[in-house]
Image (cartoon, rainbow, N blue to C red; front, side, top):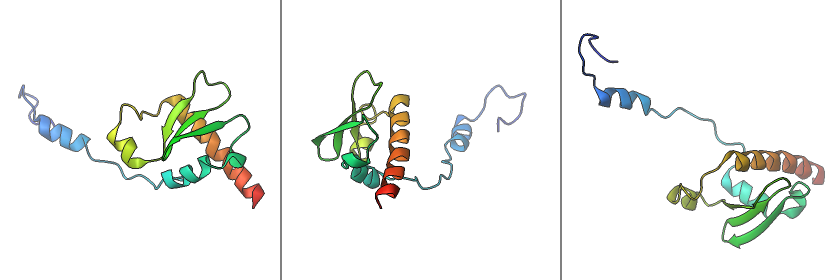
Length: 111
């Protein structure tokens, strides 16, 4: 990758090109459309989880133990166009993992 070890220079383009290959990822278990349907069904949410609509596909999300609510979106265009405002921190990821697991059980039980 670096060429001749005696050469003090290396090809940065060759290094970054190899590093930028996107790995093949499986399809998500829950996509944003499914999450949007779920988040609007309070009977499927875990106890203590509150979701208030703010705008089309934008919500205020709070769960027990959170210091303050999160602003979340299920709109992929908004998410992609505002990466700094749409950063999913660890707390949000853990909250949504719990939400989807609990909701799958509730959905199965309601069917």
